[in-house]
Image (cartoon, rainbow, N blue to C red; front, side):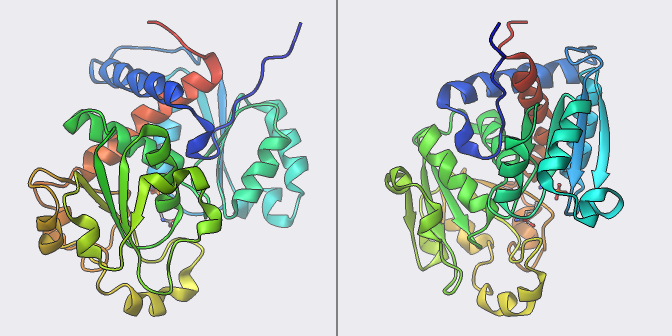
Length: 309
Ligand code: CP
Ligand code: NVA
């Protein structure tokens, strides 16, 4: 008997268009079951280990509530109180943890750490944010777009702000799902082209002026000026990013029915003005809630494959 191939979800491009079509439809079905208080326990007795090397509200809660709602159980582990924080090799930790649980979610620093962990894991590993990527968040964002406006294919997304984990994930998503990305980052914080696949080139365009990036967009999105792990640069970034604030003038450059998204947590008055994030075009609360539904679909898919109920 051949062993079943383990699939990991370490970056957006780990799934194909076909995988996404299935997972997004499953997220819709699981959300409906949840809203109808329908008990659905396909992951009865399964355990999720959640390893956090950085802070989190949404990711921790949505994974923990999600596995519980699917009939399973979550174990929270942080660097502070495990041997990971005392230098146990990643390879050893992956061997041990993956013998005791069915699926693992990790939030850490470098993508190389999660890749090494996955290589030594017997069970699926999910990226809950690294310095380079945040695929679960963009999955939730795409689902949120679909709920409000339909398929994202051929639509235009504007990115205003840092060349961070969210932007690199949006670029991968644009290529796989077939939409256009118009992005603007400040001088000194430009995209590292070495991190972007050559095949992605037709799907994104860079603009010096953030207003220009927003022109004609169906969705405008941004993120904090300083991501976790880069706190030492905070003061310098406040100066460099001052004009990369999504305000009503910038939103006015987008289509009249454009949506606004932010993965949260947000800093009103920095990367977004209060009237935009709290305004009628903002869908940030749906976006946050949808982390729960898409990640339930993701865990179900990684553990059980395709289902038809
Ligand atoms: N958006 C997001 O990942 O939020 P947390 O940092 O709270 O998990
Ligand atoms: N880019 C941010 C996202 C937080 C959810 C960070 O990495 O801190």
